[in-house]
Each structure stands twice: as C-alpha cells, then as structure tokens.
Image 1 (tube, helix red, strand yellow):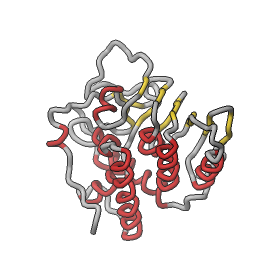
Image 2: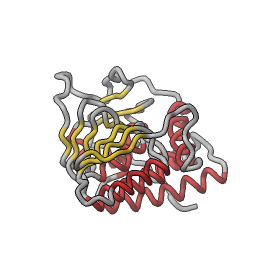
Image 3: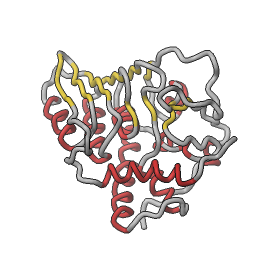
Image 4: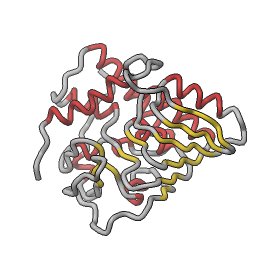
Length: 244
C-alpha cells in the first residue's frame, strides 16, 4: 500500500486547527455566508459553520415545532460546530444530509442527531479532529506554535467531553488518517461501522457492489470509503495527551 507523505496528513489537521482557532465570526475569504432558515418543522442549513450561522440556528430552535435539521455543509469553526451539536443533541433533532456534511459537520453535528438520513454515498466524511491535531504535534509530524497548541488543547478537551456526552468514540474522526489506512483526504464509513463507533440510527443509500476495503480508491469527490479493521483498531489507537 502506498503511504502518503506525513506532511499531507499533517496539513489536513493543521487546516482544521486554523479554522478552529481563527476568529469564530469571520467569514472565510471568498466564501458566501451560510443560509439558515426554518421551513415547516425543519431548519435548513446550507454553508459554512461559524459563529454567525450557529447563532442563527440557535435562534430558529426557539420554535418548539422544529424537529429536524437539514444540513449541507463542508464544515467550519470547531467551537461553533460544537455549540450546534450540543443543541441538536439536547433537542433530539433528526438530521438529513442531502448532499454534504464534512469536517466539523461530520465530527460533531451529524453524530449528535437522533435519526440520521444520508442522501448519497460519501456525503458524510471525516478528515481529522482536534485530538488528531494534538496527535500530529505530539508525534512530531506537525509542530504547533504555543498559541495554536493552547487552542488545540482547549478544543480537544471540549471535544472529548462532547463525545462522552453523546456516547460516541471520537476516534471515528481520525482513525483512517493513520496506519493501516493512511487516507490523504476525506473518508466515509458504512452504517454498521458508524454504529460500532456509537453513531447509530443512520440510513444510507445503497452502496456499490464492490466491498469497501482499506485499499479502496476515492470516489469522484475525493472521499474514500473505508471498512474498519475492528480486529486491530484498539492496537492501532495512539495515546494522545490532552493536558500539557
């Protein structure tokens, strides 16, 4: 199996970290503001997760008839996504992902939902979280400056507390970035593998007849479908220090 250069793995986590510790309310350069609106019993969320869009989402949740979140997002600010995810979990919202839920959307918002419906294979995909960023720093793959390291530790601790609350193993967001998978970009999972990580009640569309394996190539969007080798997952899990 071809192994990606460590810098490719590191840069993906570093990009996530920079999005996380940057100004939460700032729009990413060149990206339009998210559209967040209520339609019947659902909040429709399209675009980047940030302080502004998360606040709009929270405001719409004041309506007691809201029972669903229909989200299409490539991710965004970690703190804002955690705020949204906690609200989703507290309200026991169902989640529909018609097109895309990547990065912070997949890490936090999607697992927090009650019933989860995914519109197409690869729509929900991961590429690392804050614990992964700390692992890369501690393993010497990507050195963080003191300010970034402090931010990563703070968010990783909050992330770990969130996963404990919802009963999900946060390793789901980064296990395939390391041996034996070494996915360079995004990866997706089957519903049974999601459930074993604690993300249950997921409805996925029919998958291709070819079984997903650690060596499977990416789809047209660059998302690789990974089948978890549960026999070695715990042995492969690195120890990561959340405290200095």
